[in-house]
Length: 188
Image 1 (cartoon, one colour):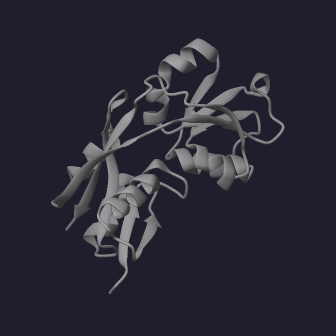
Image 2 (cartoon, rainbow, N blue to C red):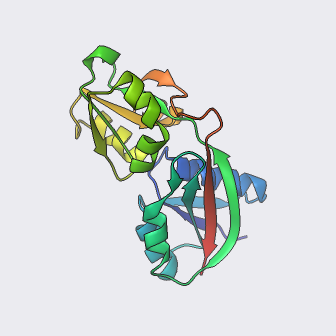
């Protein structure tokens, strides 16, 4: 049986990767490979070119609302929706090793993650600069690689702490205890 190639709108450790693994598990797909395309636009473009079999990306969150990036990207393509499903998204605050909460001067993440944690950010980090990033996992990776200043906190999933050797400062910082994101599995 041929390997199924799935493109996701995130990096290694992203919620889109988590969604792809969830989708494959639930659909008994064992032989698959994930391509990390960072954005929905890149995912749709690669799907149209036939570089993969399926694209998986978020369209809405129970707290953060519509994922506008996805809506704009989808409007440029004609595609098939194979499946619509949800995963529970738990955000964590990550930092460089040895960085304490009081050392953080800025918080970076995907705009949707920042929305899903807005009350937490207002309550605990009211005066800090927020930096929008292309992807939660890419922000974690860039912090690890020194492309972001070491006094930056990152909002991403727990897996990113291990993958990118970051310190897990706080877990479950999303505003809603049950924070579901709806994903689409798309084909051409």
